[in-house]
Image 1 (cartoon, rainbow, N blue to C red):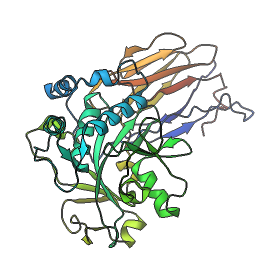
Image 2 (image 1 turned 135 degrees about the horizontal axis):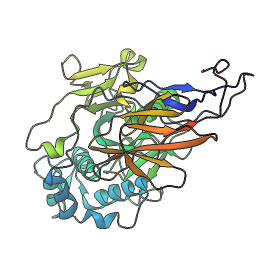
Image 3 (image 1 turned 120 degrees about the horizontal axis):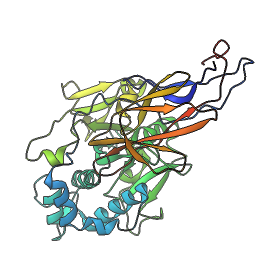
Length: 377
């Protein structure tokens, strides 16, 4: 009897520990190439998410007719840019004397549409609520150059982009993100480039076309240098949890730069130092965890393959499966597949309640190999 093997990347147990498995023939040649899937990394630090069932999310979209902003655009990243651009265009920047308003996206937008002006923290509150209202996982951040001479502080967001299977820094105040080699960067990726060589390879991307803005912005706030120091708020359900107060806890990456330098904010060390609100972690993967990404555990016999799926998907609805040209269909977290004489691939993805699909995860049922000679790397 022949033995059959699954060929895949991202095989994992519940903790999403990624490995690669490649079946080999008795002669040692690979039966089929490995599949490269996005790595699944668990969420250990950010305990809550905006609630799909909260009526405030629909109110936000309807009150400001946000569906019209993204009408006819199906590309996820372009929809995010359209929403970012709308926020930038409808909130006047006022750093010194912001309009008095409750720290809530609806209150801020109501005041802004009447001519009110706001600073970066307000922009990040609004953008977080707007992006999350469409099922995109967004979170708030604080950043700064961190020196005695340049100790300003800037509030922005990161959003998980399923299309890229990565976090991306996104700034509504200046309608801005950063790219390297055409790929949008996360805050930590920008931070890496700043510490390495002052971000010589990082490019600013303003608006919907990447061109320089028509108005002048403060250099340090639109420079990669702003991300030499970064912190992430642990509260990621601020909008739908209202009127509950949010935590002041901040996550920072504890690496050599963190240990050998001091983050200065407004001329003195950052307020979170030596307080219980500073959550310093050496685990970069805990900061850049992966929403919606699937890991799989596969058990194979001569007749069938049992695929078990796991993910960390906020507002999870279901998994979906696709084989060949057949349309995507909902499936359970365990899927039984037939072993066939020919090699074929099966695609899986997570789907949240908003209808947003996660990155595709593929499993390949490989060509036969003799049980005694098969080797797994």
